Length: 425
Ligand code: AMP
Ligand code: GLY
Image 1: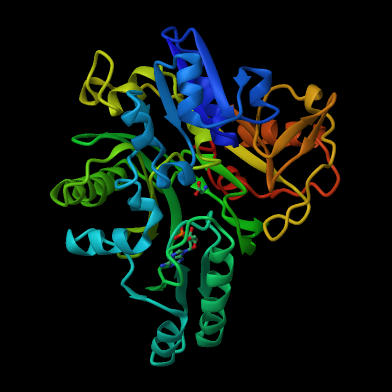
Image 2 (image 1 turned 180 degrees about the vertical axis):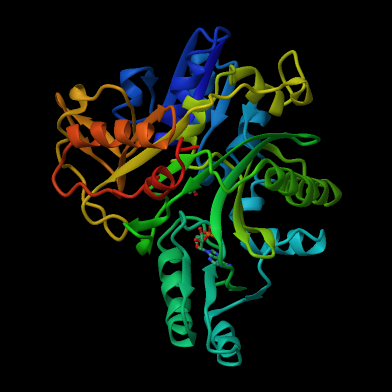
């Protein structure tokens, strides 16, 4: 079977790496890919539907939110290609915060209270009527995790309205000028994933992302600077609560609204003192979360992704997934200037010296014989181990081997967990 993966990030590198291990697969292609993906499979440039035709793809896996929100899965299906990922309508779970907040409210799924506004003026007038405490301001539409300001007080919130709209307007997908204002939730954050075939859910495992740019959760929000899994505070009981009170009602709600969600539901959770609540939903694998999920998954991913799309021999409900018992840590190496204005074109050194860890490429490209930076998040360095101290040591030992001008990364991914639990899990 020939599989085409669409995307160019660390997530897609991890997907290609995992898909290649499937005995069902004869060849994997990627569009557009990056320098690391090009080391393990053919990368092609152009329209994904045309490329699927050209290579005779049997199945297409669409990674990024932008392509999903643009309706790539609809176009692939219309051209008779089976594809993993939600249709444009179902991808609204991520591409429209207002769609999702209304859905969650209507179907009683716990989430922060919210109000939405058509423009900045109305949003600011509303903020002036609120207590002067922490509050969250978001732009509607996709803003690669950056269209959010968690304001400590009213003044920050007022400035935040212009800030999020400024950021969002630079991105391709934005519902012009709309703003969501949310109650501030405190607690630990967890990313939890479930595959979905429109009817049933197959929950995966939990990962903790670190969205702030700098150590100690300081600095601006990013797409994610590193992750660890499992998350010790996400107990089996909590997992069950999330499946029963959050994921299942969300899916039922979507069905009741006539939306068939096929793909992966990525639930961003806050473990608040009042129980788990939804921060946001995404309609794709998290990045860098996917770079840990793929190495931790022992089962073949291909038949499961196919079942989500309703193709292949088995139904999604027939699968039970096998996972590693190891702890896993990934650290993102970011370019100078990330997240505000990442610099490109710096040569990357030391990749050949890495052992004991996986290096997934994100913003990289080939320039002659060199590999150079080509985006904000450049590389993901991931390692597994028996317990967090070992997984962390492996990850950071590998990070030390790699360098490029202006490289920055967080040194505290999984640090607290490694210290607080004896076995690390
Ligand atoms: P989002 O793009 O909605 O995931 O928001 C990005 C980040 O902002 C989240 O990962 C949280 O750290 C933070 N955040 C978003 N909404 C809230 C909220 N209601 N309360 C507290 N923090 C939030
Ligand atoms: N790691 C956060 C995201 O994928 O949106």
